[in-house]
Amino acid sequence: GSVPAAIATLLVLNHLGEKSSDTGHAITAVLGVTLILSAVATFFRGKIVAWLTPRIGTVGGERQAMLTILLGAVLGVLVSLTSVGAGALGMTALLILYPTLPINRLVGSDIAHAVPLTLLGGIGHWILGSVDVDLLVSLLIGSIPGIIVGSLIATRVSDRVLVPVLATVLALVGVKLIL
Image 1 (cartoon, helix red, strand yellow):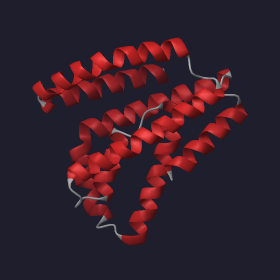
Image 2 (cartoon, helix red, strand yellow; image 1 turned 90 degrees about the vertical axis):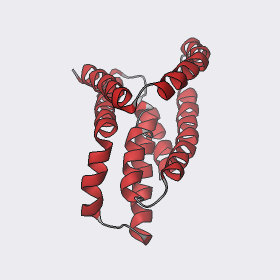
Image 3 (tube, helix red, strand yellow; image 1 turned 60 degrees about the horizontal axis):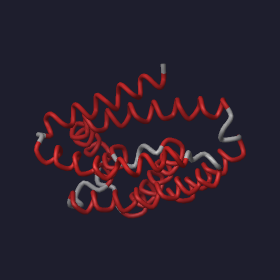
Image 4 (cartoon, one colour; image 1 turned 120 degrees about the horizontal axis):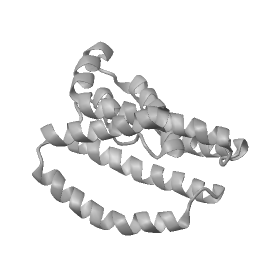
C-alpha cells in the first residue's frame, strides 16, 4: 500500500501545485500533527500496544494482510507529505498487528520498508522541483557525523532518558508547526 499511496500523493501534490501557499500550509499542519502522533507513539508505545492488542485480538490471514496494506498506504501518504511517520507510527502499528513476531524482525522490516519509501518520496519531490540542492548537500554532509554521535549517545544513555527527550522534542516541534 505504501508505494501506490506515495505515488498518488506526489501526483496530487503536483496537481495542486506543490509550491502554492495553501499546499504549504496543509503540509505544515499535517507535519505538525504527524510529529505529535509520533511523540505520543514514541512515549506511550508500550501502553498503546498493551491496550490495543487484546482489544483487536489476534489478527491473522486476510484481515492482517488488509490492515498491513492500509498501514502501508497511510505511511506512504505521511512520508510523501512530511517525511515523518514510518518510524514511530509504523513500528507501533506493526507491534499491534504482529505481536508474536520477534522484535528484530519487526525493526528490520520497518527499516527495510522505510528506506525505499523515503527514497521514492525524495525522488518524487526532486521531480516536482521541491528539493533545495544546497540544503540537501548540507544535510548529507552533516548526517554522517550526526549518525556517529547519535549512535554513541543512544548506546550510552538509558531509554528512560532518551525516549522522553525525543518524544518531547517531537511534540514541541509539532505544536509549534500547528500554532
